Length: 261
Image 1 (cartoon, rainbow, N blue to C red):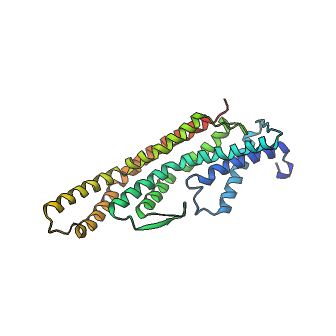
Image 2: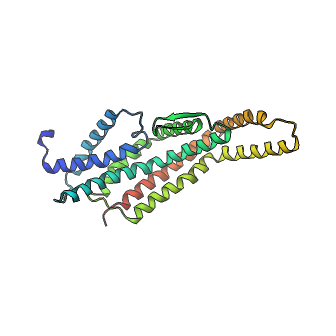
Image 3: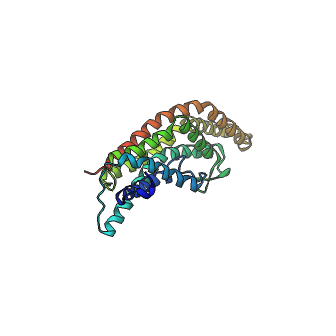
């Protein structure tokens, strides 16, 4: 069917689809990264929306005649997309936060780089962990999971019927709170090792005051930290693959929580 042959109802459906898909793609991992050109994002949003439109041909959309009520429906569609995309991004924020903690313990607190996604200065190790997580995400077809979640959201939440409840708010708050615990779990091998190294250096400083611990400890902490990063990389990859399953469950639970009663 040509675009010129679209009826008013189909244009309404397409508009709602674009708003929800656009909200997800704006902040979702990989797709929402600032390094992706804006025209590519817009093209991807339009292509996905046009692909999804025929699957919703039998869906009836009842938009309110009131302009303000209709604006509320459109805002809800965008907010639902942003909520799903942000929830999927939290795992990567946890990975980057874990890298930030490790970098600070290693003495890389002043070694910052510009994060192209947030346009803020972040520690070098945190950015390395973030890029590594992105590569693992792509290798495990996490982007396919995200696209499946987008398609499934239209099956669970009819167009124009997004509902925000206490349950959806609880799921998002719990996911945000869990970000800190996930960061500690992902960085636990390096964090514990560097902490024990700090304790050991402190004991040496008290027992052998003639030794300049700062000169000895700084390169030692960097060496041990990099060694632990290399050693724990397979473990982090395995844990991250398991966390992706939990991410999929969180996204699906959030979508189900936004269904109309």
